[in-house]
Length: 485
RNA sequence: GCGCUGAUAGCUCAACUAGGCAGAGCAACGGAUUCUUAAUCCGUAGGUUGAGGGUUCGAUUCCCUCUCAGCGCACCA
Image 1 (cartoon, rainbow, N blue to C red):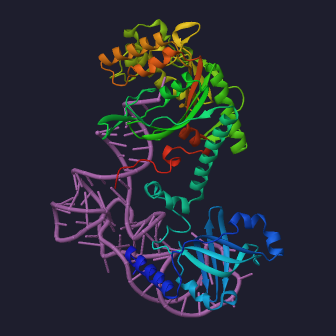
Image 2 (cartoon, chains in turn yellow, orange; image 1 turned 180 degrees about the vertical axis):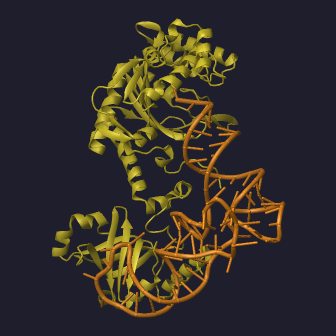
Image 3 (cartoon, chains in turn orange, purple; image 1 turned 30 degrees about the vertical axis):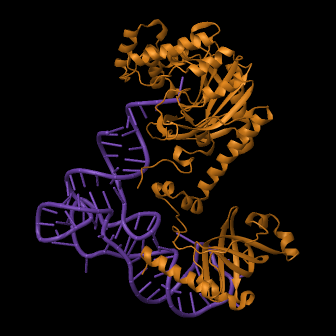
């Protein structure tokens, strides 16, 4: 006895015994008067007034001692101890024998403090709210197997308060962003996930099909082009917290579906976006963590203060010691060879330069830094820099070598926009697969006139990782993609 | 996609540079116990060692293939 089937059989037997006693092991409702934390917060008054509290939760620990039993149940707010004794329950005390760790029960009783000082509910009435048929993981070590954590997240959440805390913080972060933007008159919108053409980023899409229209559709890799249509439409401040889908590899910072917020503000430029994201993240850290100096991946990072701004080409000069603008394509390729930078399959000067940037610059940036003014070739949706036509008004926010945000002064010149798309098509002809297709409908919208606009995309998952000190994206996504078992 | 590492009871882990009946704690089951704190005490049961094949008298252990995961690389705004 004690294979998994035996556990189930034993518990089913207990469930049937409950039924025989006229108790429904899966009743419809239980009225809760207090949560566990309500009880801790108000315990003096509850004890003084002898208030009858009604509380429910899952049995996590059970210590049976003959005519007395101590049980710890966990509700949405935490653990609380129950004291069950034959003196208070009488004949119903027998039902304790039908309980198992993992069962969800509801009890009524008065609050008291034990001799050892633990706040406890002395149970007068008890009922099973859901009989559990499978054993929970071990009480002390919980779940260690990461695969099990991801595949059976519910068990991870039951057993591991850290996991629970991480996802509550994720909620807090997203709520903070919403509140922050709503207070500043941004309008939250929803745009299509199923798109007839994909754009707004460089990535491989997922393809799907609509049967009734007999139409191929892509799961969005970005919502950028739709949000800017809304700017054209006069929704001058919009944002969407969007699930995006990219058909690419999985690693510590990439999940095929992930959450990105994109924010667009009419009459603003990329400097405004720098101010916005810097202030947003700083205020968020203060409100949610109560501090701006954080520990991440073995580094101490100060989020407060004015974040450094470094020109893209200057950054390459600083860390790679070359001036790529003074080098022709052959010299660039030679440099890549010498430094073992793989540019296989990279088409176009811009992508080669960007590869040098990725390999030699990104890793070296630790503190929050705006890398600004990227090359035009790799930024088809960004506006030409007001002082230099080879660059665009764009920035990437880097922290510890990872990108957290990408923003531009949005390109609103429809003629230039068409040229940029056409350049993308040229790259495709040369063999580059990841290009942004010409989107005529989008160009038409631009031709009606889009105000000068600042736009930014912020990776929510990575931001949550940063603020919860998690090194893998799977730890901040409730159900990360794993291979089917 | 490539490389390395791992998978043993429901869970957490053992089984040693050497191939010899697969073990413990928690959980479970039976019993004792009316203020316990990872409760305690006595007793019982629980395994196709991820799957498949090979070597061997004998494989958790050695070899091969596969599956899944972690890490690294590649890919990746």
